[in-house]
Length: 321
Image (cartoon, rainbow, N blue to C red; front, top):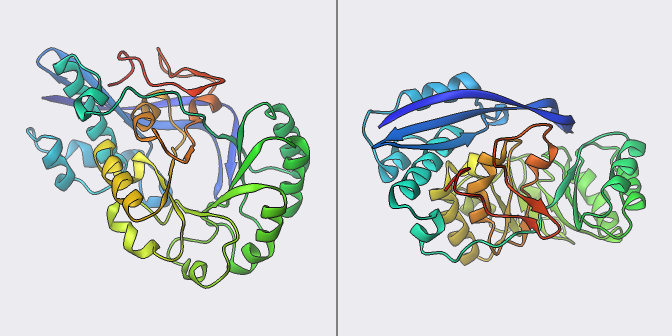
C-alpha cells in the first residue's frame, strides 16, 4: 500500500466568518492510497480549535506503519482529521477493489438526497438580512452567531427569510446568561435548534437552565467516548467525520447516540465534495443535515456532489466510494 498526503486549497466564494474568526479558502489534506492498481482518496480539514494544523496532521499520517487495515487504524490514530482522511480513503479502496459502492459493503440501502442546511456567515445585521433574502428560497438556513450582540442579527435574518426554517450555531460564543436571554427570542422567531451555545468543558449550566428548544453538541461531541459527558445537557449531537476520525467511527457514534436517545445532526468542516461524500452516507435519516460546504466554494473537485431542490445527492463512484 502506497500512501501520500497532498495539501490542497479551494477558494471560497466569499469570506466565511464564525465567532472564532474568518477564512477565505478551504485548506485541506488529501490522502491518496495506491494498492493493486487501484487509487483511492480521502480528505480531511485540520482544525486549529482541536490543536490541528496541516503540518501536524501530515506528520500523523506519515507516521503510520507500512501495513495496517481499517480496524487497526482505529487504534493507531486518535479521533481527528488524520484518521478521517485515511479511514475514508481505505473505505474508497475497499469499494474499488470489490467493484461495489461503500453502502453496499456496509449492507445499507442506496443513499437518497438529503435536504441540507445552508450557512449564513456571521456579519452585520444588514449584511445577514441581505444574505438571508438572497437565500430565502432554501428550505433550511443555519445562522452563525456567537456574540453578546446577536439579537439584531436574529431579527434581520428572519426579516430577510420569513418562511425559511432556521437553526442557529453559536460556536461556543455565548455565556449561560446570554443564552438564557436569547432563548425565548429564538423560540419566538421560529428557530428549531441551537448548536453549541456554551464552550465545551464549560457547558454544565445546560443541565441546570431551561432548554426551550433542542440543544445540539458540536465541539462537545467527538466520538462515542464523548457521550457520557453530554447526558442531561444536550438533546442532539453533531457528527462530523473530522471529529470522529472517519466513517467507521461516525457510523458507530450515530448508532450509539440514537440508542441513547439523541437526535442526529451530520455536519462538516469547510472542505470539498470529497470530504462531504462519506458524510452523505452517515446523513441518511438524520434529523438535520448540514453538508453545504461545497456550496460555499468558488471551486471544487471534478465530478463534485450534486445539489438541487432535493438536497445533496450521494457521490458518483469517480469522486468517492
